[in-house]
Image (cartoon, rainbow over all chains, first blue to last red; front, side, top):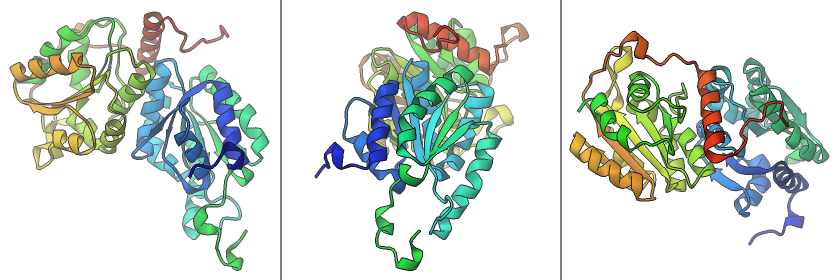
Length: 186
Length: 202
């Protein structure tokens, strides 16, 4: 059964409100556990077209095409997906100067309990810097709405990709970790 | 049927009211010369992102006919995009894959479509509708005309023989990727009477 909006995580509700305020009409995404509530909200509404992609390699093209058609489009993925999407992002940025706005979860951030997630953080910032992508790390949900508007403004004026990286209270604890043993909690 | 023959079949159907996303290599030189270079075609220099770009454009402008000109090498670089396309099935998008079974522009190394891979069957299995393989200009013309006008998505794999048309130097496309982007954006702004990139005029 669907949860009413007020029962969803605050970050997810504010994200959806921020997308509406910014005039976003298309979200292309690969779901991840740290933002599952946001993906659920997006799936269950009709105002924004939610395009579920096979993998992150699809996202830059979909959002670039939507941009050419005059729409505000957003990529959402886990930060590990940045590695998968690197080639089309770099081509769209360096070859064509196409603005892309992306939100990614900061899997592996300081305090991470999963050994396999650490590498996602180790590679994220170097990759963003290599791609010359300006980014902001958001941990307070109150930062979400104003930064969505700024991200779209900056991407369009610079004609270059921009990233928002969600961590802290802008993420949720994945269901598979809620019953983690005490020594494994943050 | 070589690529130049196939493009000669398709180009007459493409009007200034339509938009195209085309793959790179020799294909975009052929299209540049055989379809009017008025700005309604964009060439992403990104193998594996032709169909996805056309998909985003088709979803953004559902009233506008969108043509994606693909190659076997590009499709093979991101076969997952077939699944994404198959889940959306935009009625205004027609994909044509020119499949010569080789990477011709780099010297003719075989692609996997020359082995056991059937791209049309893959697209069908991924959820795409109206998928077909054609092997001559008559069947290409018949199938393209139908798919271009039926308001359903179409996915045509055109099996072509190797062979590149040699265009004269003054017939080659000379613009770069940034100029191409702005030409395409400005064309769409006029066509749709919208603002895509306002620049400083906010």
